[in-house]
Length: 463
Image (cartoon, rainbow, N blue to C red; front, top):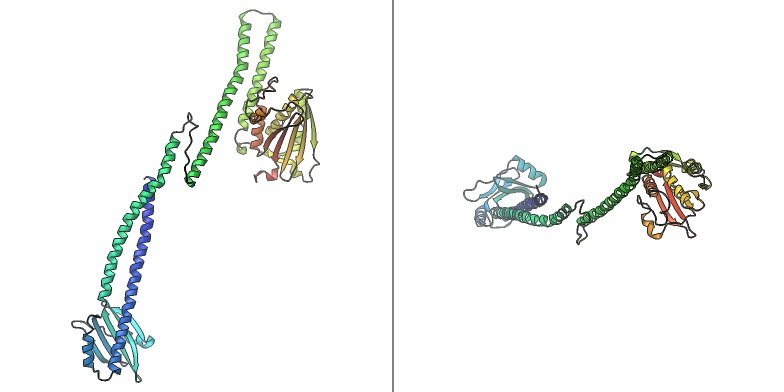
């Protein structure tokens, strides 16, 4: 069932329930009001009758009956009986062909206890009241049929039924109209979303006024599409660059081997080709390793084994590791005064990934500095630790800064150095999945400063 019909049905059921409750309430309370008003008339008539009978000189029972006969229009099918306190009938009158309502022991008992008692019998309303005169007590029972009141209630019933049915029809039609109006923007959004595909990611949902929940939904979807489009663009560039970087050493290896196999050559030439091929294979191996590390670092920390790591012990391995890569590379370590609590030295993470991320940045600092020196300082705060890596190299050009963390991107001023442009991208991803941040700025005097911020272990799960 379409949503517009569901909304219409639910809206109709809700309004129908409210209308039914109102109609029943109106009819019920109108009935109570009719009964109360008619009983007041019966009581007044009963008091008038007994007062005329007992207190007005010259009025006997026959004259009073004639007076009661003249009230035919005022009260229909009426009967009035005056009992003395012993239960004997002192006076009685009933309209023609009317069976009078008489008091029984229950009526007498209740009137004597409360001096006034109302009840119904044979569709007639009746009142029995106690009346005192000259130290004598009487019980007056007056009953009648409220013809006018019931006719009005019948008219009210049909008016309410008509209003109820009309209200349901109006509710259904208006509910259908407004549900169509309500669903129209959703259908528009659905239509526009169907037109978006992997070949048409630039398409967005048009956002109109007013700014309501559907507007917010459209904005959220557009933001999602922006992120997806950016992700696809990064993926396309990554695949293109990776294909290029992989094909270059493979083409070089293939061409060298083909040329070498065409003719017999001296051993020295074979050695030269083997060394060249070995260098290409080593570069290819390093590139493949970097690509695998990027794939491992993509995503969240959910699939990575996280252990407690002492950051100072991890950093102390850097100087010797960089010396193995190049004897000219130097790393200066400088730590703030160590905190009293050892917990502030501990982080949650994967030791190999964190180490590789920091090593890639330090390696770049040593590679691009004329003195091949990287200065690393460690600072502590309440819930984070900061690692600053400073070099004296050429820095990064302003136009290159927005792209330095993209895979395979290399600054225009470092193209003379070997590398694939994966180190900073890999470092950024690794630090990101450890809930940290990696920031960069150029030194005013030349060189670069990279700042790594990582949450300490006790604050890791609160982020």
